[in-house]
Image 1 (cartoon, one colour):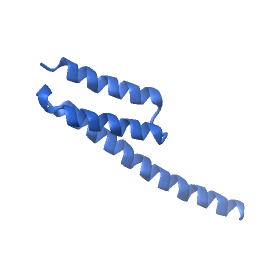
Image 2: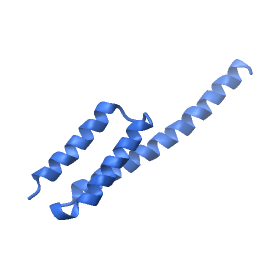
Image 3: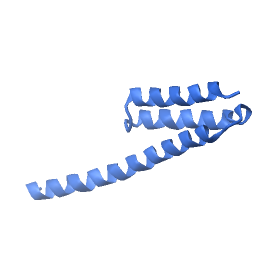
Length: 84
């Protein structure tokens, strides 16, 4: 494979990875937003479990850093604990 062919393949691969990463990050942000929109503590359990699961999945795929995942989980649990 020539140098040009290698570069073109790398561009194709990075676009594909970028598309997948964007999908997972969007899914994570939506799950977090769903938790932060809840105002009643009794209705939040399923959404919190879903959000934490999504964050862990995205972290496991290497799309976000471990510290970012921990910070996001801490942020949403802190919000839930502040509800009455």
